[in-house]
Length: 258
Ligand SMILES: Nc1ncnc2c1ncn2[C@@H]1O[C@H](COP(=O)(O)OP(=O)(O)O)[C@@H](O)[C@H]1O
Ligand SMILES: [Mg+2]
Image (cartoon, rainbow, N blue to C red):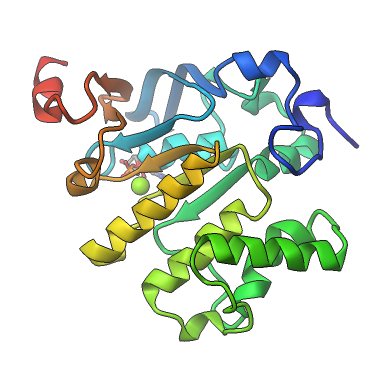
């Protein structure tokens, strides 16, 4: 079943990569093209390189292609041309039976949480582990750890529908990290939250990042980019443009000269 050393089913990060992979970018886009309609290309020859352990903001106006970029990465969409390399593997060429290995190494958090509202917190967080067929006791331990990390320790038996929006997003973050993925993608994760909660949730992703996880955080919310200097990539005309000094430089200026 195993599709090769870089997608070993080991769950603890650190054990799961071959030595060589540790020195390559965790992720690269090479001349990626994507259009849903031929007259409206979204990505037009996008190039991008992300190192293991980076925290990167993706920004750009609504419709710029942020969600498309992330969906291509976790294989919910396919590229028209070019290639995406994740942990040394070309995403578009993974065999169907290798897709679970990809998903296991990528945790995703969405704007609308995508939780099962009438399930308990623990049942939602357990989902990525249950498909792996881990022993029940290990699953329970992992759920407990993940809930502690998002500030929801002891809340496992609560029904998700009874939680506040901010708490629900914490559940979604716990579900994204419970399998200890190498990469966490966040697609406008704070879009449905008020500004203070948005900053709290951003802090949660920063905590996750501090444990060595690579984080890609898509947002059109400029105020979040100002919280801390970070690598900022602007999607513009179907390409990825690095804002050279994070937000020390002015993105608006970058866009004008681009
Ligand atoms: N499934 C789809 N079918 C057709 N067009 C789509 C689809 N998904 C996105 N688009 C279009 O692609 C463009 C980029 O969308 P998206 O990646 O969602 O941008 P962003 O996340 O930056 O707002 C938009 O013009 C959007 O309307
Ligand atoms: Mg989007």
